[in-house]
Image (cartoon, rainbow, N blue to C red; front, side, top):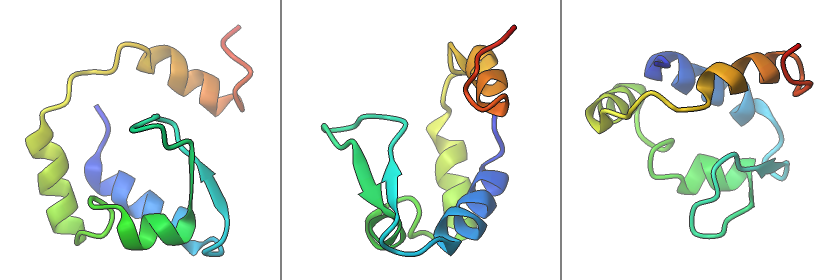
Length: 85
């Protein structure tokens, strides 16, 4: 499974370095939300406003199951969404 510490660093160092008004199209549709902004995620996301230590503990405590499509999705994403050949 993924590494919460790496995830936190990636979001904070890459996505949060973008201008606040940039749109983010969410990968998971919770409550009908299809897009957000960098600013909204920086200031309103209950997980991403935690310290790194709190975020890592929170994610580990969730005990998430291995995602069913992760072995297909990650290689496709690494090929810029072109799928697997």
